[in-house]
Every structure is written in C-alpha cells, then in structure tokens.
Image 1 (cartoon, rainbow, N blue to C red):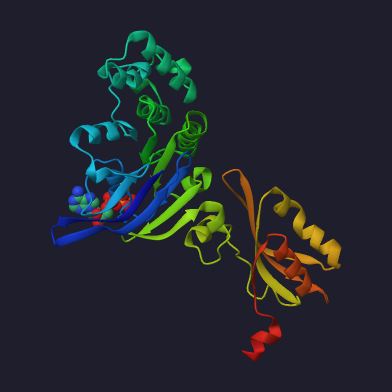
Image 2: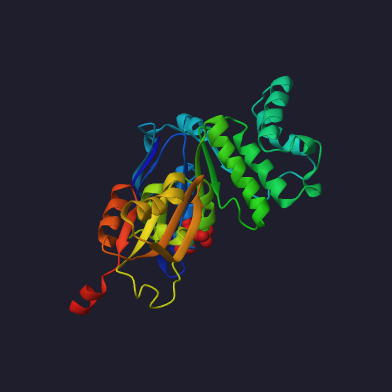
Length: 335
Ligand SMILES: Nc1ncnc2c1ncn2[C@@H]1O[C@H](COP(=O)(O)OP(=O)(O)OP(=O)(O)O)[C@@H](O)[C@H]1O
Ligand SMILES: [Mg+2]
C-alpha cells in the first residue's frame, strides 16, 4: 500500500509561484488499479512524478508499506525507485527489436541471456505481441509500440506500475489494447497500478479506485463503484448516462425519480420485479445503461403510476437501488 499524506508542491513560473499540488492525501491500495483523473494542469503528472520518487514534495509524506520514503538514504531510495515501473512514451530505441527494447533494462542490470529471454517471452505474451518479437519499432503501430513500453516498464517485476496518460494520442482500439495490458499486469502479475489520465473513459474501463484532482487538490476519492452511487459525485456524473429527457417528461406520473442500478441482477430484473410486486407500472423516461469495469450500471429517469408508487420506490431502495426522488407535483406547488 502506498499512502500519500498532505502532499504539497509548487513551482516557480514566470508570474511567481505556481501551486501544482496542495495538501493531497490519497491511498493507492496494493493489487488494485487506481486512476487519477482531472483537467489539464490539475497536478496529475506532478503527483505521478512525486509517487515515482523522481521529485521531492515541498511538504507531506509518501509512504510505501508504511515506510516514509523521505527518510530513505540514497542507496535505499535507489532500491525503492527500482520497485516502480514507469511507463514512458515514444522512447523505444529504433535500432532494437521489440524483444530487444524490452530486454534492455535486464541487460543493464546484468541478467544472463536465458533468464532474459524467458522474461521477455512472458512479457511479449502478456502484451499479445509474441509474433512481433523480432520487429523494429518503426514497423509497428503506435498501439503496439505503447504496449511494448508497458512491457519494458514491467521487466523488473515492479510492485508499482505507473502510467501517465498512457492512451494519449492513440485511437480507440489502440487505447483499449494498452488498457487491457495494464489490467493484465494487475490481474496476472499482481502489480499495483497507478494510471493518470484526463479521459474518464480510461477510468471507466479499468479503475478500481479513483481520485479526482482539480486545481492541485483532491476533490473526490474512493472506490469507483461506491462513488457511482453518490448523487453528488462529479466522477459519477461524468461516467453515468445522461438523463436527457424532454422537459415535462415526468408529467402525468404519480412519482418520478432518478434511479441508479448497479450489477447484473439490479440492471436486468429489479424494475420488472417491482412492477409485478406492487402492480405499479414504471416508465423509463430517460437515461440509459453503461458499464463501469465489468459491472453494468444504469441510470434512469423513471415515472411511476398508481397508488403504490411511493411504496415501490421505497422497496427499490431496500434492494440496493440508489434513488433521487423528484418532488411530487403537489410538493412542488406547495414550495
Ligand atoms: N516543472 C515545472 N515547472 C513549472 N511549473 C510546472 C512544472 N510542472 C508542472 N508545473 C505547473 O503545475 C501545474 C500542474 O501541472 P501538471 O503537469 O502536474 O498537470 P497535469 O494535470 O498533468 O496536466 P495535463 O493534463 O496537461 O498533463 C500546472 O500549472 C503546471 O504549469
Ligand atoms: Mg500531465
């Protein structure tokens, strides 16, 4: 487990000090994928460089398995850095093959030939490029090159794999390929993964946990599926389907509500079951279905009709639906 506690970092810009990070506190749980998302300039890359131990904070502490990294002597600091695999971009050596690029850090570390070949073979398999082992970078697609760069970052069996904007300038298919590799690194190699991105699609695809940065501060952080159930969450708003129902869509219903459903059972069967149980028709007026990781998630605007409308909503809540009820017509008039 990596913990970041009260981290602050400023730079000197042309117009005086620029605060890149302010009092950032964050947990990066072991064996999970943590996503850091935020707009341009929000401090994501600065946070990544500090966690990679490439730069020091002005104040605050980064702990790895409880050890304060600021207290490490130079030798231990180098050893701690070696436990972190940083995915770089666009710096494969053109005169080396795919396999040769992945093997380079092992050669530099003096690992012998047979061991190197075994390791590189496993990583080529992990990234799905076994058949491209002998190809040179300029004969590969940008997506294939990006996967090789992930493999090279994994070659020293790092405890933490860190990727800053790994899907930048890749098309959708290539980006999906890179994200699959990050996910396999976690699932098959047990790596802890920290991925920085400005693309909420990346968070949706692979993150278990997420931190939203804005202006150098953590606005929200936590488990993604938990945040998705929080009606005030900005992360949830950006990942859930838009409601986009026409104005007045709820007219004529006894109750209307925005409802979030999570998981196969909830998304598939809960509304029909409620209708059958309470003889209450539930009309879907807006919203839709999406996926967060492997989990289906729906957000609908629904209208309920009949004397049991309220009871039906209450029952849905007891079954795990997250409900944000719209004011009833009479309540709206009273207000
Ligand atoms: N080495 C530096 N010198 C001066 N200012 C810096 C430096 N690094 C970052 N900054 C400033 O700190 C702030 C945060 O930058 P950072 O690169 O961490 O943001 P980011 O979230 O990664 O942005 P992007 O999405 O564009 O990559 C910005 O205002 C940036 O200009
Ligand atoms: Mg950045």
